[in-house]
Image (cartoon, rainbow over the protein chains, first blue to last red):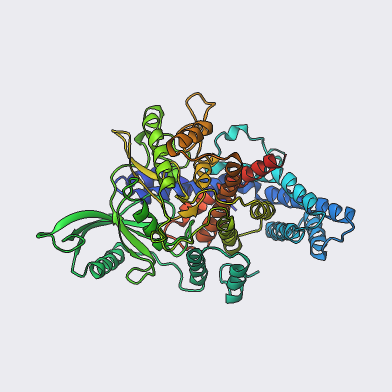
Length: 172
Length: 403
């Protein structure tokens, strides 16, 4: 198949930047701005498409680590982790081991894990294990959010993108 | 799996409202937003529709027929539809002997927005600060969309530019670099006007009736604001975020009592004012839709947020809102206002603003774009990508506070 996503993005971007944009000289500002943002969205896709699967697998692993750490804290305080969290951890590990798992599977399980973890923090309010659970969230979210920022570098918001480390999902 | 937030049930809406009580008008605006999601899809609004609605609104308010000419779109901003036009009329009291022509701007909200807000409050706060600081005169409002497809207001047209000609490519003025010459002229005005806004008295109880009245010594108004942000998160988010759950608890537990009630602009930063590039003078302060009655430290820390900063020419000095280093900014403000800058409140509102901005970007912007609910989904989708930078900053700041 020669009709690849990469080629579609490449030809669309060239047409917009080299033919359409120059022809809009007299257009209203917001029209030009929306075209430039459309081109930016296509460029983002072109740069990130090759890494989508690795990125979502990395993200799922990160939240599994966070969930495991929270379960450990609960157990050390004599608490039992909610069944939902334990089930999601099992599903997540199974998906990572399944070569036929879809990207959407990783996304859905990760989203459910995030929700369960946030819910655990809310439910822990006023308990003696609240501080320990919240500390895990804050600590382990650091590298996750750094990865998210690196994912978004093509959008151009980082003051010094060159200072960010090369992410594992991109480098190896 | 169906997304309850894209087609919310009454029970879902009511549950969030009851869990996160906030100001009466804010509650009305956010509830209206949720109800809209079950209505018709957002349709692009034509210029002709806006002209017709504006003509009927203004004629109704004035009691005589007017004419609208030279209508055209006005770009700028990430949230509202704006039309500039010339109004041919006989003045506000209708007694002018001949027709006069006044340039004006219509601001109308789309079906959803990065900042879901009240035109009524925007109108009232502009009226409250007019005369003290430069703002476009607020003429008329259509807060319940009686004449226009969505709530709107009409104000005078302010001259000036939002971006310097040498750095005009920034989206909505984020990280705007005014350059050393212009900066030296704009920065003192930026501080002076903020001080003036915060010192205005609202104690008569008559101005800004759509705003709940905070009480000095109480933190109830602060909690309402935190809840408003949390409510937006609950209503708009695409996926959950554990960091925000942790920070919300802190903000509620540590909300400081007010020591002084100020008009708070809510979005005071680079990119949200117009200026005369030749003279280096601020000609109009814009985007009052997020205004609240509350704590001055909210505006101070908002203007100093990292997403509105850039490095100075020395590549080392960080400039708040493209103006000056944070310590200079706070020092100049204290001098101009006579109001103290309290380190604990600075820390609290620095956290609150990071929390709020993270929510507006990762939830409100992303949701509006996904629901195809605005005239510039591509812009809102783009800026929602900045949410991870904001959230990372929030996490780092919170972690630093905990040490």
